[in-house]
Length: 317
Image 1 (cartoon, rainbow, N blue to C red):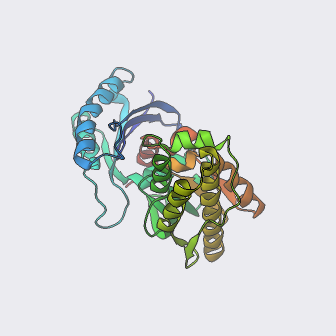
Image 2 (spheres, rainbow, N blue to C red):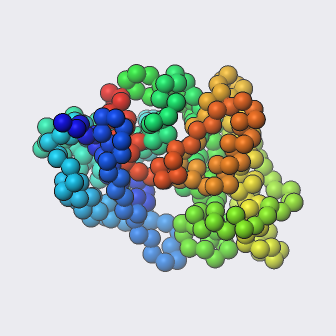
């Protein structure tokens, strides 16, 4: 009999339900990206909650048609953005409620993890990091840019924020520059594709790093918006310059944190971690510094239920 582990994640922009087996094989990876109306720059929480309420029953029904639900051992969910006090977003309550009901009806174990722990779990699964006691993790997405110290205990993860953005997230910076150049939100994927056809401009872009691992991005946003307004550079070159700048300061704070905590293993997760330029730049630069750099598979960088399912399989809570 195959044992199944379910992960449910209802984030700001994706409804996710995943199934893995006892050998960490991905059995199902189902996602429905939430719809953002043309011209809008995002979704309000109540709009996202409404879409999750509609989407999740469809994913659950699809799951019941593909696996024997009586072979499910654990149903886990993401219940909040981060595993810290007062971390809360209404969207996660949808997945939490459905996961709890399913566990009671089927008589399975029920576990809760943070959305951030799910991203870390997706990067640990099927890799060397699952055996590391301590490592650095950078979570870069549309809502989060945090540098983390992760202690990998047998029963749980202990995650401490040691750096990151003091204002905008990296994902917000990317989307705002893309929208300024006429792309539809969210535009990170399209910008990544276009940047492959561009060249980084030789410009003195401001980088504001504080206390080695903290930084501000609003000045960079203003710089690029002013650049777009006053200079007729190709969009491809602007995007290449933006990603080159982001990669450089990420590299700097990772190096600083590895020196400070005497760690040489780094996991980079979140939707922005799927950016091809950033992945290659950071791998090349950090490997030269003898720092082992790990990324989840491209499809596991964006929001998904795989990491939550893995955490439910491996950890108590």
